[in-house]
Each structure stands twice: as C-alpha cells, then as structure tokens.
Figure 1 (tube, helix red, strand yellow):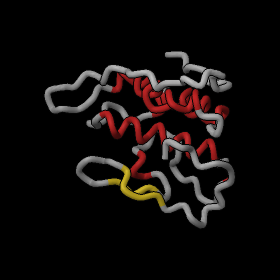
Figure 2 (tube, one colour; figure 1 turned 45 degrees about the vertical axis):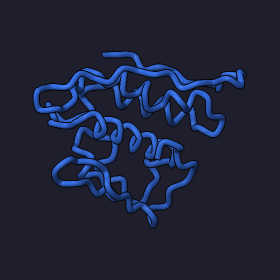
Figure 3 (tube, one colour; figure 1 turned 120 degrees about the horizontal axis):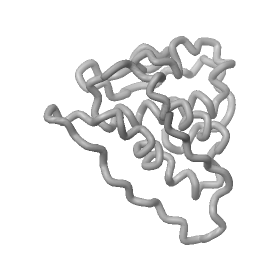
Figure 4 (cartoon, helix red, strand yellow; figure 1 turned 90 degrees about the vertical axis):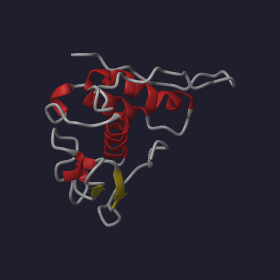
Length: 146
C-alpha cells in the first residue's frame, strides 16, 4: 500500500505555486494506468495546499481512500480524467459529511462512480456530467476542485 500525503496548513509564503507533475503513462488505447494514483492525487490536490479554504481533513481522508487500489474496480478502462474526477468526488463526499447524507449509495466504494447516487456519467467516456445531490442534506464546504 502506498502512503497518502498529509496536507495540513497552507504555506505562509505569498508565492505559493502549483507544482507541475508529469502526466501518467498512456497505454495503446490512450487510456491511463491506475498505477499513477498517488501522482494523480498530488496533481489534483496540489493547489489545495496553498488554499486556506480547503478542508484539509476531508482531503486527507479522500486521498487515503483514493490511493488504495482496493477502492476501485478491477482493471477499468479509464483515462486520466476519470481517475481524477473520482478523487474530486471522494473529496466532495468527505468534505460534506457524506456518511450523513440522506442517500450515499455506492459512494467511496469500489463500485464504478457512475453507480454512485446522484452522479451521472457519459456512457462512452465515463466522465462525470452531472451531480444531483440538491436534496441530499450535504453539510460543509464544497471543495474548490469541484
């Protein structure tokens, strides 16, 4: 298991810059390998380290969930964007007290995120198209990654 990075306080420097991270390896089908989960996590949440409004506790939990391979379908045929969207959705879940939602069916499970309650994905790309959680009693901040 890969250890998840811990994000705590934003740096005090006013020159907080987003670090560039190399993109994950592409396979012949132009799909991304799930072996880059930690790299994707750093790329997605890197800017949060500089943002005082980010919920660092939710972010730490989401990253820890995301980098565990057992939390994803076996060998999905996804590109890099889908993996990153999955992390952003997990961050939303933990930031808005997802365990207390009226319906959190399939969220942060190994199920494909197209089956997560309120998530609509494109049937060909699996990109998230719509979130419908309006009446689900979310509490807490909406992550800036959304």
